[in-house]
Image (cartoon, rainbow, N blue to C red; front, side):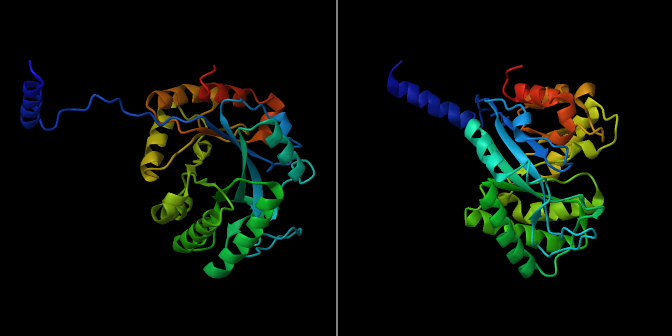
Length: 306
């Protein structure tokens, strides 16, 4: 058959079957991202205590920077953030040291958290403009001092409308990224109506600025099964459509699907579907007593080294 005949035949087939299915495989969206919160509980855990696999992208998430005073009865400071972890143990020099030893390590600064002292840490700005100004300036100082690469938004209690939260956080992230203060950002919602109303409003307007969704799957009830976890994952992937929703477990006994009950089995299922965008853990402070056994397994899975 001549080349002219082949071209004619191909053109004829295209006319008959204009929507022939593609033979290309569906691209997988698995990543090798591993993230771990550290510093919130003050358990004397050091960066050097935590095993780091060389074939994953490893993020330490420093917990927390809070916009509350350091007094015995903390009061809100309208976006003027300060470090609340043990600065002697998790110091700027220790950040430099671990980065020098491991080229695959990055750091994130987590904002907000659950408590300030013995009370809830509320998101309660005086105004959008003043909060964003204060937050940008104070966060920029901390980022520079600690050589931090990104931020994580982890407010869990609110005394502001979702629209105010959206504009404060959205404008802050936009400014931090535009001025190259940070290179990535994440949010850390969980399945609570008030929490979700704030984070979903933020996602709908500023989702393009958010690189990872650290969904707190461990906030679901104890005894969560593999099938329930996978259903929760699909629900939150739908809620944060287009986002990289990370799988998560806790080592403080709080809840959700645990490694002992099938967490890694669920992750392998997600991996087979091309949906394992990464894993994060709450927290290094609690894992130290078990010598980070679950962190090692999680990183091996991500690196396909198990």
